[in-house]
Image (cartoon, rainbow over all chains, first blue to last red; front, side):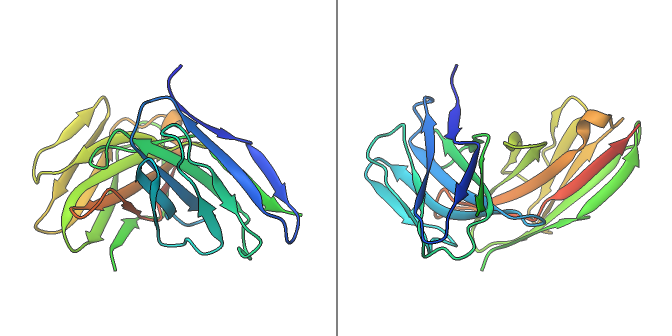
Amino acid sequence: DGGITQSPKYLFRKEGQNVTLSCEQNLNHDAMYWYRQDPGQGLRLIYYSQIVNDFQKGDIAEGYSVSREKKESFPLTVTSAQKNPTAFYLCASSIDGDLAQYFGAGTRLSVL
Amino acid sequence: EDKVVQSPLSLVVHEGDTVTLNCSYEVTNFRSLLWYKQEKKAPTFLFMLTSSGIEKKSGRLSSILDKKELFSILNITATQTGDSAIYLCAVRETSGSRLTFGEGTQLTVNP
């Protein structure tokens, strides 16, 4: 099946710990995105990548890091510098930057 | 700073009603506006609009864009309980691929 797979579905972080959220797509899409969704708010862009080995900061990049070593994969690391990491994280991809973005099922991150 | 405002923020209707959701925007160089439906997890794509006055339609859902007045509406006719979801509006500028999202409208359709 073609699609975007995010894992895990639920993740717990201890204080001071870095955690990595996985996003894999087999749609052969060039562009990939990470969003954060808080209750009562829309999606806010964390990082995006339009091509392999290149990525740009979004509106709320502080405390996060990404890599894009392969076209299919765009992992997001939530570092200990992110003081309020509890949120729903959504990964998306698009065949190019001009067309619709398609989303994975999300990862819900909570702090222990 | 780009801004996308959706209204109402929440709406409760009965099955069979018709609803209109609004999305207004302020962006420097508009390219396209997108609507998504989010039920529990992944937002699913509904429409992408680039030209004023051309209605896009899919079943009971339709949407239209007004680039002069800087807004779009999403209409749902003969609503069903399965239409209950958060409806998200997003705008893209000409300068890149990133989307700016509104807060969303939480629609609840009661039987």
